[in-house]
Amino acid sequence: MKIGFIGTGAMGGAMLKGIHARHASARFFTFDKDALRLAETAVLYGAETCTGEVGVVDASDIIFLAVKPVHMEAVLKACATTATAGKVFVTLAVGLPLSLYARMLGETAKVVRTMPNTPALIGEGITLFCCTTAVSADERRVVVSLLEAAGFVEELEEKLMSEVTAVTSSSPAFFFMMLEAMGDAAVQSGLPRASAYRWAAAAMAGSARLLLETGKHPGELKDMVTSPAGTTIEGVTVLEREGFRSAVIDAMGAVTKKARAIGESMHAKG
Image 1 (cartoon, rainbow, N blue to C red):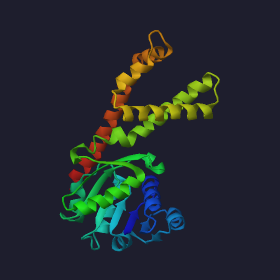
Image 2: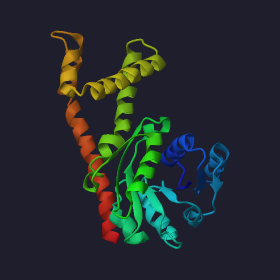
Image 3: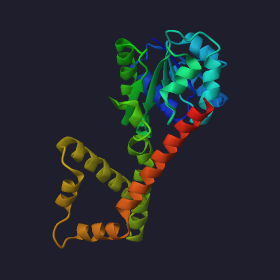
Image 4: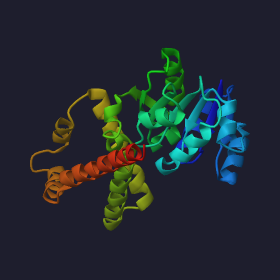
């Protein structure tokens, strides 16, 4: 299998790392405008470096497009200057619809649109995907097997891809902000910061696993912790008073609005 990466930053690098760990016998081809990062992929993964996007497309069967949305159109223009028939393109860019790739690469282009998240760096990510009708069942299975190197994978209809951005892709930032705030509070109480981060993160991870494994409603699990006249209900009361839920809902709404806007701007260009 010949796998290409155009862009090897945080998300592209995470995918490359995970896929290489599971498919070390594959040949990897990479291009990145950051020469140092490009050299690192050669050392770490034995990747063959290319001088541009065309080199990656020509050499690969499956090409991961791991660049920011603002740079995608230029990358696709470069890719379209060479033969793309039969190639499968896997995009990691937020907000950009499959129609953009079809417009740039041709109506019969094989494109898989994904929404990954940063826990992919340790193989604990979640990736949602959808694809063009040109992608065959066998090609879909191969791409899913590659994405699974970064964690859990699930198919989602395209009309919900922008809407899911806040739930999976942006949410780690919200979790980390909460953990940071919990660390500050712990220090205020006299606890060591590093230990507080470790304990709070373990509590968060365990709580998430509890929800996933029991299938219980989050509210039910919250109620299990909040004993009558206990300590937890005091904290819950403060969070409710300060608008914790509303802040989360508004933040996720803002993410969704931005993701939609990115896609709409590309439609306008077309």
